[in-house]
Image 1 (cartoon, rainbow, N blue to C red):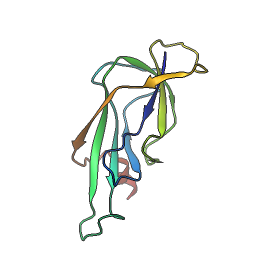
Image 2 (tube, rainbow, N blue to C red):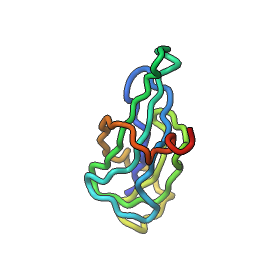
Image 3 (cartoon, rainbow, N blue to C red):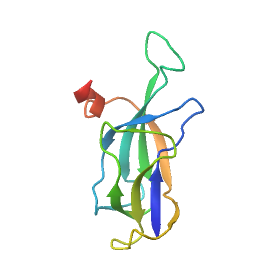
Length: 122
């Protein structure tokens, strides 16, 4: 089966997210609990203040799947519900099949770390 990995909408004000770190590669088998990416959400356009309201989040996979296609790279901006990767239950399944469902993920709030894209390109 083919699964898509989508950017979750974390709150009603979120318009986009920036990919800060990508931890997976094409052809890699991910297990439940594998970290996939870190992203940042900037709400400055909604809540202007002296300290920008930027939050950081990690996306973790909740099932065993293979990475088949990546549509992002660190520094990319994505909208909520954008497909950022295709995954499969077997390593060689044809990608021209219909997508069965979104991959199961979990999102956790994290703190900024220097390996993030914005730390090296700010």
